[in-house]
Image (tube, rainbow, N blue to C red; front, side, top):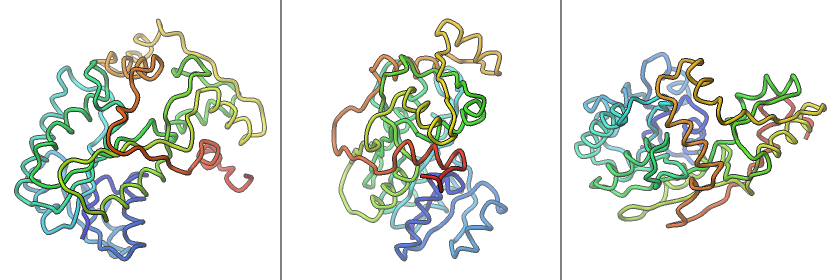
Amino acid sequence: MYAVTGITGKVGSTVAHDLLAAGRKVRAVVRDAAKGKPWAAKGCEVAIAEIGDAAALTAAFAGTDGVFLMTPPNYDPEPGFPETRANAVAIEAAIAAARPLKIVYLSTVGAQVAEPNLLNNAKLTEEMLRRAPVPVAFLRAAWFIENAAWDVEAARTGVVPSFLQPLDHAIPMVATADIGGTAAALLQESWTGVRIVELEGPRRYSAADIGRAFTAALGREVRMEPVPRETWEQLFRSQGMRHPNHRIRMVDGFNEGWIDFERVGEHRRGTVTLEIVIARLTGKEGTL
């Protein structure tokens, strides 16, 4: 039996589907019963738990051969990441009490970076998991290619504002299908101690590559337009962010190159290309 958190999202659902396809039993960890019904219909057990509820997580993790752990994204954390720290305390207590046979944690490229930025969320969780009394794998995934979903509407107009700059600067990216498939495979493996698995796509991609992929998928020219760096803070605050600097510094890190893989442990490449993902996001997959 494998417990899967984040099962209603793209990565978690892929993990669960791959495990089910391999004949494994799955316990869907969801925040409310309604979200669990589709998974119960697929034959999964359902556990109700918030990521910050130690008692509920203990019950969800108990008696499992492994746990796929995702923590909820927080794009506007309070200074000091108090929510991440509180969740880490709950997760640590649950692991100690439930003793699952292993943990696969969806971490991120750049989790090792000390410079304050949004990815410190993963750094803090990794630090906690290093103390876990069970084998742990950190799946450090690259920038999600599916982040381009935010740009589909703009692409249909022909111009996409880009925070990734310079436009020809390639960064590590990966498709959620590759992340989920890798996580499911790791859960079915055995190891001891802490394991780091870095994952990116078949090659690195730039904002210009995203524009070209949209152009090919939509059959019309799509131009990427850099958003001036000096406007970011005001723009993010106008969108409701109260603490935008961590997000700004994360994007700076990708653009300047100091957010990248640590090149420790294992380094893997997925097979799903940017072009495939963009075609799916735009509903043009069948035209490839």
